[in-house]
Image (tube, rainbow, N blue to C red):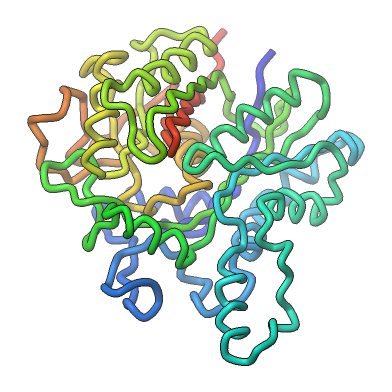
Length: 385
């Protein structure tokens, strides 16, 4: 039985909506990340994947990212005919609305009291799922998943599980994270933040850029739109090697990718494009290139989109699966994401896209590898008779 990703609400540094996102990718190497002042985040300037229609000083940015994504799904949601208790919500996040807590703490330190509009609950990890459920009057199962950078890819697999178990007819699934001081300064304390736009898989890569995004799918067993894309497979593993560093032999990533292929009943040679986790850190890119080379050799085109969106943490899995969804939903969208990389000869040999390249794809695999060795790969594609 197929599971359909009927529609996608997408918001990131690439823009708001499907058409804007595709246009910005097609215009690459147009810069999409923003150089922010050290007064905002840390002791030196850095680049972030900012959704610039929402100023950093604006309150409740987290929920407004969700609103921007949900607004894109209106037509598809109008086609949902099941009862509200058969609509579930599963969202991935890593920080929820913690920026509101950061802002409130500063007010408290200055004035000795919390701002009137501050609600501690907004920082709870359930907040994005609960907000969507309330907005849509969905009363089915509702929960969030927080496994760092693999959160929203896991949310997609979990959504399929709810449909398979007949606990829901429709699942709103995906991920959202907004910029906050905690994540930027936290990664900086790990010496992982680049002081320039990140360069995944490049010889001179220096680390990541943090970003924010919302990517929300409408998943169901019934196809609701002509441009719906099939969720074909998902693979998960947990190597538990280290709290932040990946296991160098790539075994956890290899397991996740192979499980996804097995789940989708596909061979490695069937995959037309891989959206790599590709954080542009020394260790992750070395591990992932090794893992991809062991499963796919150097035959399958590979690139990372994080130089265009920043690393959107809890939203990354759904956002990057969303980019794959766009290639599949719109056959005319053929410009693959490419990495302007000076090839690192110490990395394993993979088919890294380093120049503009056009291709039509039928099957895409997207990787999300998180802290604690929490690995997820998902496969999207077209159903063939």
